[in-house]
Image 1 (tube, rainbow, N blue to C red):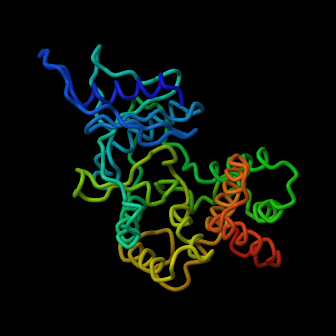
Image 2: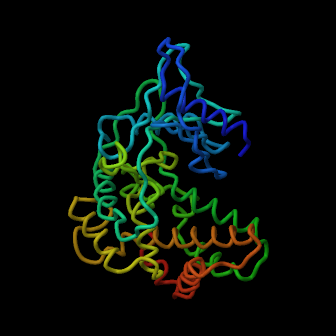
Length: 332
C-alpha cells in the first residue's frame, strides 16, 4: 500500500472524528495508526474512527448494498454500523486513489494473546441472530437486491492464488483433488441449492471479525461487510468446523460454539443430532481455502508450510483419499 493512500485514509478518519466546529484550536490527536495493510484492504485509525480502503476490484454497487445492510435497524446489535456520512459538500471522499473507502467506529478487537477468553459463544449467538434475520428491502438509493455471500468466491480465489504461486507443484495435488470433489456451487461455479441460499450470512467468520463497541467493554459485534450477503448459513460455521476436524480447535471449544449457535435458534444446522450433513461441504471448502492460502503464502515468503498450515494441507489429503461416494454424500 502506498504512503499516499495511508495518509489519505488517516486524514479521512481524523476529519470524521473531528467534525469542523469553526474553532481554530490546534489538534493534539495522536498520529493515525495503520491497523491492517493487505491486498484486500487497508485500515487506518484516527481516534474513535477507522477508515478502510477496500480491494481495488471491489464492486462499488455491491458494497453500497452491504453498507445499507450493516446500517439497517434490523441488524442493530449484530453488525457494527458504518459512521454516517454527512450529505452535501461536507461529505467525505468515497474513494481514495481509485479504491472504495468506508468509515467505521473503532472497536476493541479480540485479544490474540488470550485465547482462553476468545468469544466463541458470543460469535455463535451473533451468527444465529444474523441468520435468523429476514433480509430487509434495500433502500431505493442502492437500486439492487443484496448480493450473494462471497464465501465460495473467496475459496475459488484462494485456489487460483495457489495455482499462480506454485504452478505444477506436486505437493498441491491433495488440495486440487479435495477442491475437485466439492460440488460446483461450493467452487463458485453455480448457485447454491435454493433452500440453503436465502439467509443473511457474514461470509468470512473468524475471531478477527469481532469487536467490542463501544470500546473497550461494549458488547461484541460482527465487523467487515466485504463478504456479507445471501447464502448458505453453514458457511459461517465452516471455519471453526474445519479447524475442529483438522485438530486445530479443541473439541470442547467447538462444542461450546455449536451448542451456543443451536441454543440461539441458528438455522445452519439441525437442532440436535449430527451437524455434519449440513456442515460437510462448507467445512471441506474452508479446509481447501486455508490450505491453498498456506501454499500461496509460504511460496511468497520462500519457505515451506509451517506446522499449522501443514495440518490443513494434511486434512485435504484425507479428504482426497475418501471414497468418492463418501466425499459426495452431502454435496447436494
